[in-house]
Amino acid sequence: MAPILPSDRELIFFCKERGTSDIRVVHFSNTITVKFGLDITPAEAATQQYVWKCVDPTIFRVSEVHRFFQHKPQRQTLVTGYLVMENIHGTCLSEYLETATSQD
Image 1: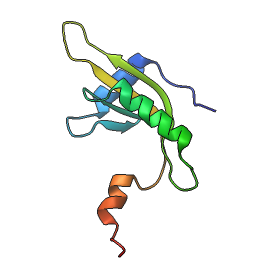
Image 2: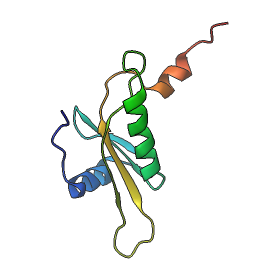
Image 3: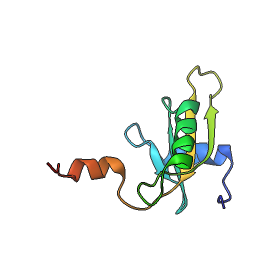
């Protein structure tokens, strides 16, 4: 069951408060993570949702997409994408790959 999600306005405010130019993934709660930025697109959200449906979760976990939306502030031309997804606790793939040793 999907968690009760905050409004788009609440998420935008939260991301502006917690995010920086270097940090564009924020944990809204124990169950919700938001990835945001100019390069976050509907295609990324659709791809992640597709992979979530197809992957075997006993082998590899992918965050379920709860919602995707875009926001364009008034008097600006750039659109920011917000990917709202399940928060999975553990080691992320990029961290794992940095520490993994190759096996011949």
